[in-house]
Structures are given as structure tokens and as C-alpha cells.
Amino acid sequence: MYPTTNLTVLFTIYALLPSPTSSTRATFGEFCDNRTIRCDSAAFLTCRNGTCTCLKSDAMTFSSSQSSCVALAGEKCKFTVVEEFRSWLEEVGCVQNAKCSPSSGICACDAGFMEMPESGVCSPKRVFGQGCNSNGECRDDLKCVQGQCKCDPEQAVYDFEQQQCVGLADAACLNERCTENAICRGYYGGHSIDSYEEYSGEDTKCVCSPGYTKSPEGLCQVGHGGACDLNTQCLDKLKCQEGTCTCPFQGHQTFQEAYQDCYSLIGGPCTPNISPKNESSSSFTHCVKPAICLPNGHFRFECACPEGMVENAERSCDLTQGRICSSERSTSGGGGQLKCDTLAPLFCIQGKCQCEDEFKIYDPLAKRCRGLVGSNCDRGGQLADNSFCVDGAFCKQFRGSDTKGRCECSKYFVELRNRTCSVVEVNNNNMLLRG
Ligand SMILES: *[C@@H]1O[C@H](CO)[C@@H](O)[C@H](O)[C@H]1NC(C)=O
Ligand SMILES: *[C@@H]1O[C@H](CO)[C@@H](O)[C@H](O)[C@H]1NC(C)=O
Ligand SMILES: *[C@@H]1O[C@H](CO)[C@@H](O)[C@H](O)[C@H]1NC(C)=O
Ligand SMILES: *[C@@H]1O[C@H](CO)[C@@H](O)[C@H](O)[C@H]1NC(C)=O
Image (cartoon, rainbow, N blue to C red; front, side, top):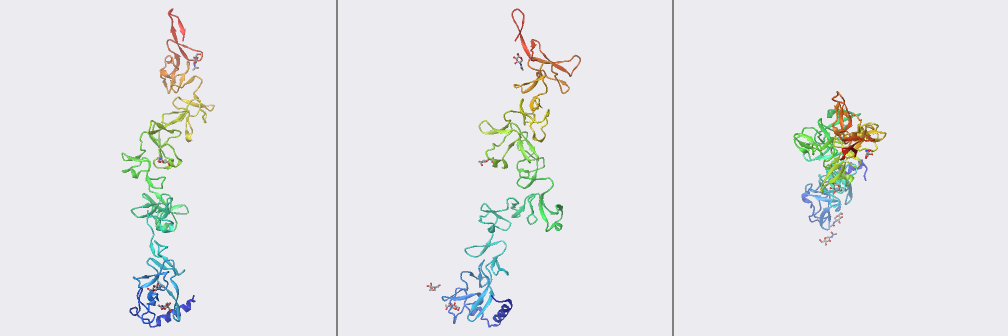
């Protein structure tokens, strides 16, 4: 290597020498003999075996557009030329789409191009969807994901219109660009800044525009109840029905805000949970908690209550009589807590689902609490139906009251010790007998 000062001198000497014009010098591939026909040394050619070839045959290639030998990508582009009694430091051009790096003195491919290991040329990096072996082979905004150039699945999505990756909701903006219906916002010390000028250089984040909800995939779509024209505008699990994004099986599903998903009610369609991975798939249909998905018939799966539970008025499941429950005398299911059968109705008494008091008895066939003889049978300010009372009894209203009454054995029934009613039979002698 030459010190910088000497280098300047050497170049000066070279420039002052009478330089033969290229027409008198043989070019690449032409005949030469080093005496009468010499190769164009300014084009980094040398005479080898009677033919003009590049000085470094394995590190250079002849470029007809530059009429000179050029260094291949990854090869030295600054080196010492020795010719007869002279030697000097020269910079040779680089192959197409590469530049000589001033620091390393090696030809480096331009941005967006990659070095081909075999040929040493720079070819355009692969675009979206093309095959790859490493990140370096893909265009700068892409990554090599499972052998294909793709956007970083965690951060970005490919926008086919703009032909580039754009930021997903809540991820950083890419070139200030975000997925559809999201805007790029800057954050300075955790505070949002509106104009790009203000935030350039700060952290950026894609934020869903008002009226749009972030989907599990990081897209900004119309949420439940929002206006739509097409299914694709709605969150994945929703369908555009009558201009509104709703659950696909209207009347059989409920939308749960916390999960941004539709949950099927008892009797609604569901996906059997074969593998845990399925649950996150966009086609998976959940059952409301604590319902389970059971095969119904040969093909269809439907949400049903598990053992020990019974369907309630919300088409979800409540605990049946005798089951262990948690909150005392509470039928409210706040916080996803299981309730005792609200229709029977059962209450959580001493940790078990039971009828209101000892004047009521649970009828497993009718799945409801029934009033024993002597039990009040007014319900919600009205006289209860006769079926409120145990078999053989009726709701007898109090004298002068339209709203209050008690269960009493009907005609031809007698009260037993346990406050139930038993039918009486009349024998041939017209005597009453207990049944
Ligand atoms: C030189 O040229 C001759 C004849 O074309 C060929 O046979 C020989 O292999 C060449 N040698 C080299 C080193 O290229
Ligand atoms: C021509 O000169 C160069 C440089 O001195 C030398 O390397 C090469 O072998 C010579 N070629 C022939 C054909 O004589
Ligand atoms: C659930 O996963 C299984 C096995 O991985 C697959 O065959 C099936 O198609 C998946 N079902 C759904 C609805 O995604
Ligand atoms: C009440 O007593 C009768 C007669 O002993 C009996 O047959 C019936 O099962 C009892 N009913 C209940 C609910 O205990």
C-alpha cells in the first residue's frame, strides 16, 4: 500500500505519460503480442496467451458498457497495478448495480441488490412471494419467512397496491405507512403527536382510525355493530349483514367485546376443539362459557351444557341442584362465575345450589323448585301458576287477595307428612283411602 501523498504523485505521473488512444490498443478478447499489438491497460486488460483478458481473470469481468474490465461484487476495486517498471494504485469500476466502497475498497451491491455467489454480479433482491434462503436475499422491507420473501409477520402486512410492507395496528409505521384504516402516529415520551413534521425521528405507531377495531391479526376492521358494505370490511369473525357487521349466526351467537369474537349459544354451531392451535384460527367457532361443543347427529357440532348443568334463559349454562357453588345466595354471575340454575330457581345456599327455602322442593323432571303444601305461591307480585306447587296441589289465593296465596292439596288429594299431596281412592263402600 502507498501512503496518500505518494498516491497523488503516482496518479499525476501516469496522467502526464503519453497515453495511447484505445484505437491503437487491443480490447477484450482481441489478439495481442505485447510488442506490436498491446492490450488497453487503461481498461485493466493484459495480454495472456495471445488474447487481451482482464488483469484479474477470476475477480473481474469485462463490461462493454464501460469499455473496461470491472471488479465483481465482493472483490477488490482498489489495487496496485504493476506494468513493466512502474506500479500505481488504481480504482477499477464495479459490476452493474454495485459501487466501490471508499472504506473497504471492495465492490458492494447497491441497496435493493444482492451479490450472487457464483457469478459475482448484483441482481435485484427478491420481491414479495419469491423464494429465499436468507433475509439478505429479500428486498430490504421483506424477510425470509418459511422460504419466501414476506413482511415481518409480527409487525407488518404486504400492501399489494403500494407493493410494500406497511405497519400493522399497534406496530411501528413502515415508511410512515400503515395497514388500511390505520394512521401513522408519532409518540414523544408516550404522548401522541399529530403531524409528521413534529414526530419525525420519534417512535411511530399505526393506530386504527376512529370507527375501526384492531383484529387479532393486527388489521383495522369494522367491529361488531359497525356499518359495512362488504364482509371483508368487518372483523374476521363477523359478517356484513343488512349493512352491519354482526355475528354470522344471528340469534345463535353473542358477541363478546373482551375477546372480539362471536360465541355460540346453546344449540348454536361450534368447532370441536381437536387441537389447541385451532382455537386461534379465524374459522374456529367457540361456545359460550361454560358450554361445550358436542356432536349432534352425524356431522354437525352444537354447543351444549356439560354434565351437572342446565340451559338458562340466556342460552348459556347454570349449575343444577346439589352442585357446589361459590357465592352465597347469589344468582349473579359477575366475573364469569357460574350461577345456580336461574330458572328453577336455585340459590347458592351453604355452598350448594338449592331451592330458596325448605318450603320448596326440587323436581328433577320439571327441573324447577316447587312449593310444598303451605308454601307461599305468589311470585313477582302475582299469583303463581298451579304448576308452581307440588303435584296434586294448587295455588289457593288468600281471601280477598288477588296476588297472594299458598299451595294447598287439590280436591281428591290429601296432604302427607312430608307436605306433598297424594291422590285418594274411593272404594266400593264409598270410603276414602290413601293412595
Ligand atoms: C493458450 O492457448 C492455447 C491455444 O488456443 C490453448 O491450447 C491453451 O490451453 C491456452 N493456455 C492457457 C493457459 O490459457
Ligand atoms: C505480456 O506481458 C505481461 C506483463 O508483463 C505478461 O504477464 C504476459 O505473460 C505477457 N503475455 C505474453 C503473451 O507474452
Ligand atoms: C383444526 O386442526 C386440525 C389439525 O391441525 C385440522 O385438520 C383442521 O382442519 C383444523 N380445523 C379448523 C376448523 O381450523
Ligand atoms: C313424601 O312421602 C311419601 C309417603 O311416605 C313418599 O312416597 C314420597 O316420595 C315423599 N315425597 C318426597 C318428595 O319426599
